Image (tube, rainbow, N blue to C red; front, side, top):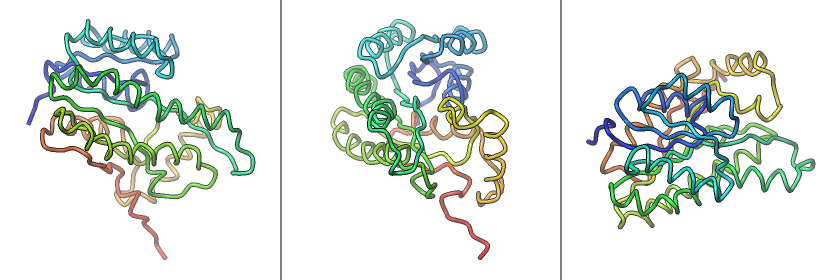
Length: 253
């Protein structure tokens, strides 16, 4: 099994939530980590918090020039690319009859298409390191949340992409996998304007009882699972559920 030390890792959406937790864990283990985000203040704060093993840049993964910049900055920072973690994502919710077509296209662009395009750019570098690409899925594809069809559809697409791209890129010695987290506190609903911080935290805590293990998870636990997929040399096409048993559909009936 490979070791994270001295790897060069790209994490999109790496300045908060799950991405920040990954960047912290891997940089402390000795990896060179390049992270990006769209909010300049978050990018600057992450850089101050994480130290010299991390390079934080302002970039929008839906923009072609920014994707090119991200790859080039990662190559300069880490001298190679061992893993691409497509973590950037947005939330969009609404009743089916009220959905806006442009907002649907926007969330597919952010959550699905940007990761595909970025992997296309990183492919030649990942093939040189027998590297990996990891998508971040969602328990929205294990439990049905009314009104969340746009978000769930994008995350379902990522699971299918994982399997297809694993088959496509196997000959290049590139592994492609997906982690499916359960309930974990991030800022995704606040960024979408759905909840304030207090409401989002309470909503998540109220979900603890439907996790078999009786609690919500942490970003550190997702980072641990992603690290296994970065380093596991014979794992590809896997959909790894790290959800405290939420997807089991626990019921007291």
